[in-house]
Image (cartoon, rainbow, N blue to C red; front, side):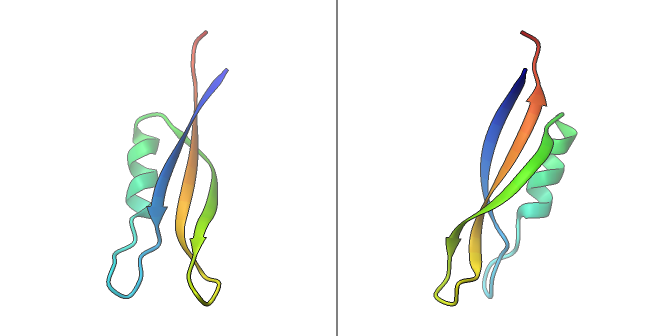
Length: 61
């Protein structure tokens, strides 16, 4: 059986640094596997600004 977590992150912008690489690396070293990245918010031009990263981990029942 797998356990799933959903982590909010963004790809940065004019005044913000992107955080997705650090987020993925941190969870991966703790045994989580990247499943999917979904955009959750968009700017006025239709470009995604915020993302939800989905991780999974095998758990013992």
